[in-house]
Length: 158
Figure 1 (spheres, rainbow, N blue to C red):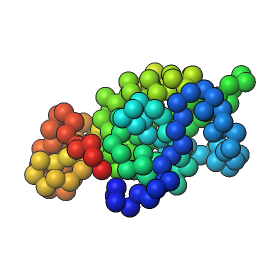
Figure 2: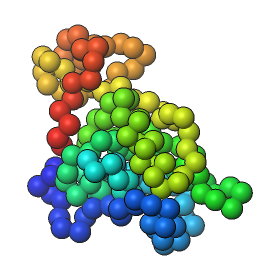
Figure 3: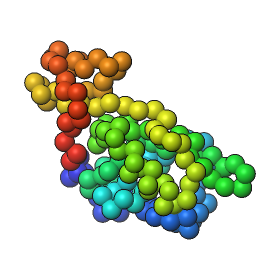
């Protein structure tokens, strides 16, 4: 996937409240009702892109500390994070990536939830090497039936 990322495909770097304020006013009313794609780069900085974007493109093809969708809502004269998850199938981030996501949101000054609104558990099958989403603590590969490891083992490079 990284080879398909073109120069300029990356999401908007949002490292401060001023960056967020500049970015949010550029969004249309239609875009604001939908979640946005986000990544937290290896530098710990939030990057945002329209929902129709790919996570790998939002990150400019680089590795990330966290990724998926984020929603915002305007309340009491300020923007807050109304929802954030880790379901990026391009990066398959661990649920343990929350502290990096929280730190990036705190740097921007956004009120946020205390954790992912929706947590997704990813594992790579040691047998067939396919990526799996673990549902209801059933650590069995949906592709070949092999047991999946209890700890995160998905290669962080897309």
